[in-house]
Image (tube, rainbow, N blue to C red):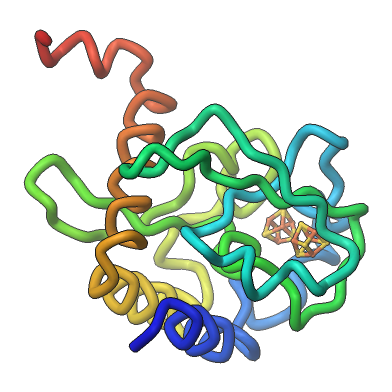
Length: 174
Ligand code: SF4
Ligand code: SF4
């Protein structure tokens, strides 16, 4: 499966399922869509090829690097979007795939979502829509079949480790 096909499949799997069985944006005023001009969603490797024609996403390189040294791109939006152009990170929010140091895949609440998302703060993952959790698991498993996407999940997972425990890297002497 090409990366493009992989992302299209992932988009479809998450087209109809959302974190709750109703629109969770009604709880918080769609807080996750109202960042500033410097906040946005990381794109998976080469995901920009699907989104360049959206016309509303500003794609910006970040300091975070893919394993091949390319910068991870951030998609910044004006707070409104055409649903078909939502990046994968928007579709799975507030969950994230996570690879532990042994390479075991889990899906968990994204620690970066805590300040923003009432679900991440106040709801157990088990209380989310089971269809949503299942779809994120299926997609995460599919993404691992692509080496670059897997590499990005590894990079992201170490970033989340640092986010949750700023002393994390100090535990592993160079
Ligand atoms: S911030 Fe959380 S609760 Fe609000 S719309 Fe986004 S995912 Fe739903
Ligand atoms: S792209 Fe759409 S779903 Fe993603 S943050 Fe922007 S408005 Fe929200």
